[in-house]
Amino acid sequence: MAKTSEDLRSPLSRARGLGSAKDGVHHFWVQRVSALALIPLALWFAFSIAMLATGPADYFSVRHWVSAPSVAVVLVLFLGTALYHSVLGLQEVIVDYTGGSMRLTLLLLSKLLHAVVAAAAIFAVLKIALA
Image (cartoon, rainbow, N blue to C red; front, top):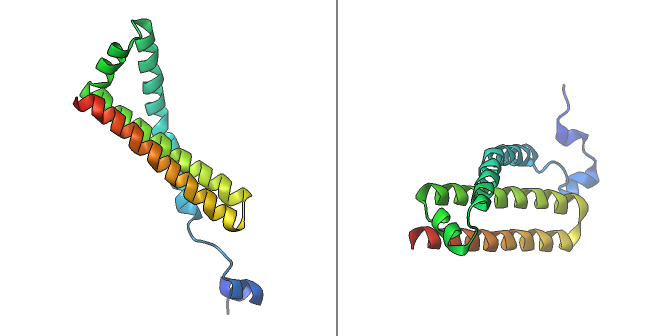
């Protein structure tokens, strides 16, 4: 009869509930997919900024560029994907290198800060695009 993973754990680890969180593979793949999505988005953003720099780089030319519907949509996708990838990476660092109540505090603070920045950035793009 084969032993299950529950049988292989020590009584102390069973009592503490320690073991796999069963979320590692999902987190791994989401981080990789967001990184792959960022490749064309970051290239588009860098190319667009380089093209903007060739002309008059004033407030009105940037505002005119952002107000184009296709640019606004891709810019929102870039900002959302970049911030999501950032929060995933920072979550990995916090989980790996902190512990106790500091871990929970930093995770909550990181997610809150990323949500505020994402909301502000997307609001700014939409305000310019829809004005």
